[in-house]
Image: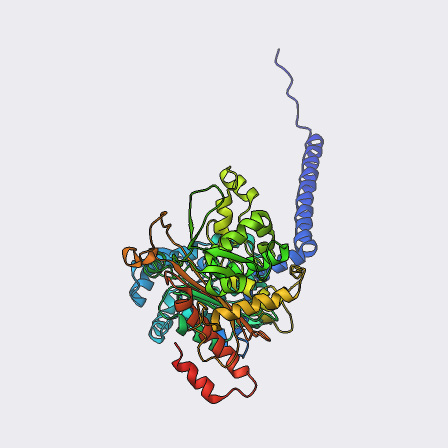
Length: 626
């Protein structure tokens, strides 16, 4: 029997269709609602954020580097300034094909492989997005014209005018001022990226480094509108940068020139200090170098020549040169003996030409092998008698000698604003035990008494010790800065003044140092000939290589660089000191004969113009003085 056929129920079908339509309508409404909600979120809630992003597509904030502060000497002579320069800059984010761009620049500007390699290194340094990086400096007018003509082929490449550091005196103040150079990767990690936005230079050495924060200034900003190729169309807003502070130094350009001329072509150093303030009046380290080579990047060839030179032009002898002070420290040793009471002003020692410790066969030689007979303190200082000071050092002992010498800055950094200063060395029992794990021997005390052995000092420390004798123990730390737009150097860390039991001992030692230059038996009497003012000084000779027992110093048998160093320290006038000077001539051999005239020339240049009614014929006589 066949199954019955069901007829179609249109009511049921209609209800199914209606339900489906309703579900579809709900789904569509939900989608429209989600779209409207998303649009509301983007257009209303996130309006500020996306408006800023949109503006950034055409508006950029560019840093404006501040102008670096200038540096002057005490008389307003410019020692470091900024001069305009045209640089080639590349904004890597806007360069489509960097290798092709470099090849095009090679052909347009006739660059060699070293130029390109240096430009690539500069461009590879870390930088802010869309920050232009200078890759070439000091562009010529022809090079600028070539870039301008081919600008359409060089997206992201521009010629920018900027100020570049310039040192008009070149090598004459290089070791005092230092120099600025390009910021390297290591410095980028330590500096404030906001403060140095748009700045590509930083102080590397000397005053440029020590006072970097004052010299740098405060960066400015400008909002600029750019086109699709990144070219600036207009400036929307500008905040001007604040230039760095100008510095006025204690240095005197004329005195510096006199000191350099007196030193000549010899290797050495000259430091002049005002004992009443601590201001450094002259700062000479020879040979020097041209700091302008370092500003925009020194070539491998130029740097190699400076680095490999036997004369070490990059070596700052004033601050880093550590030399045995030799006999220049004898006045301080004499003052130590008087203050400790182990000798008196009239104490005498017999000098047969050598000194021996009790029960010891070794002979410690006097420079005058014939001996000077009975010697008292004034004669020993004027004659620079070694035997007297061997005996005095033995009586003092290394402990008292170390403590007293340390008060004068020997073995410690003395300056306020000189980063590179070495500490020198004032040896002691504890130092030798820690350094060599050996006890201190009496013979080492003897040679310390004449400034030899382990003792080392920089020319700056010798000048400061001399200034302390001139000021009767009043401490003023040496400083290069005179003022920075009203800001004075910080002297809060100045050591206490030197106190001695008998204040008249200062005058006694000063008179003995005056005898060095003006008595018939003084070792530097020739350097002080015909002087219209009184001066005090002390010569010194420092061994470079040791001379065996029983042998004589033979200059002709030694290589030039193995000969003794010549030193001289002094101050003038003795009544009211205006200047204290230390001079070192490497391998000069004779302190009084070689270094003494250098100090005399500096004295004359500073003192003669300041003497009341100085006679003209006296000044003329100085030109003929040996």
